[in-house]
Length: 321
Image (cartoon, rainbow, N blue to C red; front, side):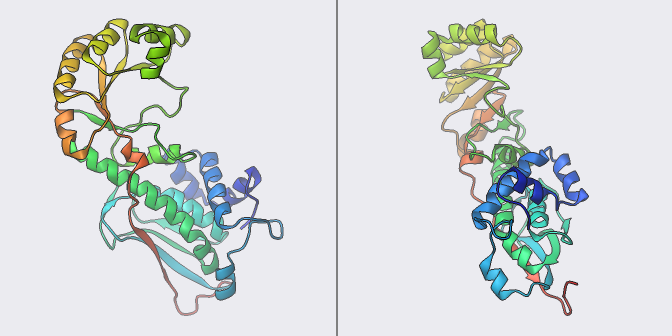
């Protein structure tokens, strides 16, 4: 393990990535620098401090595991779900276990898995693998939980034409990874930040003096950005449609109100998103009203982790040179 906990530490960890892992991250649309930064912070939580110019030491593994011992590890599903973040787990294992670590992605992100299914295989020094284990599992279990939760919602609205969409209710520092996991589960992403699209919410409406005034203010200052307007009532939906909104967020509306909103917006080509208090039990009914999206913050802020574990196997003569 090399490097500290800042930018230099991130670069040092990323230096151990194989071309295959770099390519897998690129195919996933995950920026290498962002992943390296996340890894550096996560590894530093387990290995705080500086020793001999590097990160801290895994004292348990250092005391109990011979430095030359190597083994094969398998990340295996303990429960059924959808996996996501396997290239990220590979990046952790290679970064921490260091040169000579060989990782094979057995499953693909977005695949359904069942108990006992192997999703990733790694061979390397046991000390490094044990040091990397919790960080790798924390990330892949969480991201797979997000993908699994998303797939449940996507399955619930199948055939309605509605898509399941995430929100900005993400864990700080993990937004890009969590939104990637949503895509792995079959969902679609809302805006990634406050800069790439406008969402006029109730407090903006109050501050601007009304739905139409708030929309006009955003359109005037940022004419090229898509503008979504949050509406609490059907009357506000009508006002937003007439103002020229691209997308309307229908917040906490009943099924009847959603159908009325669709009737107003559809002829004008305005898309609608249902939000607020949605549950899997009512997902199909909400989607059947004709809305284009269901906004589900729980995909990222409340998804249970998918149970995955790392099993090590020592073979006779497993000694590193």
